[in-house]
Length: 161
Image 1 (tube, rainbow, N blue to C red):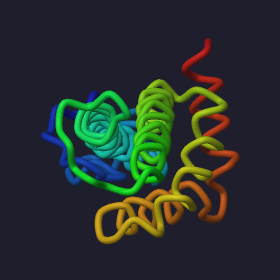
Image 2: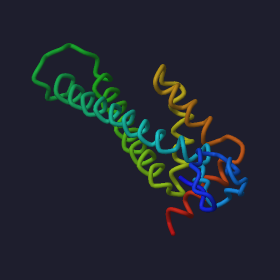
Image 3: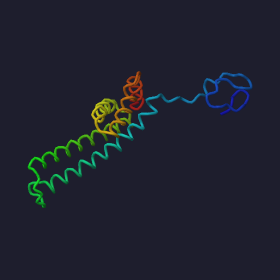
Image 4: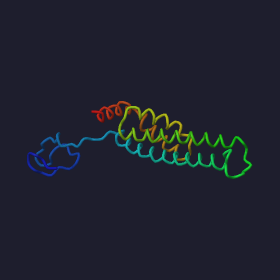
């Protein structure tokens, strides 16, 4: 960028021209807020993390219904409660995976409901060591910090308009 008054090259963040001392108020690039810098990355992390949950849920459902199912191909001698237990855990993983992908996509699109969903999933993920804990702490640090609610609402309003 160059000064419109004298043509001197301007450095990013410079307030006044170094040659003619003209104020450079219209030259500043808009600064992204802290939340906007992090929310896209959190969305990507939630999608990747939740895709792993989906994969785990599908594998668990396959194992529960083929190996340990009542009509299973293999005679395992496993207890009768094992198949319903594995199947229930698989369904919970699938639900958490779908909700996590929705939260990640919603955060990337700055949708209103995505912030609340990501916060709820973050608290749940705190117990999933080590990646769920790290993602949960990072998400809570970004989305529950002071002023994050108002900044996210502004992002959502800017995306809708």
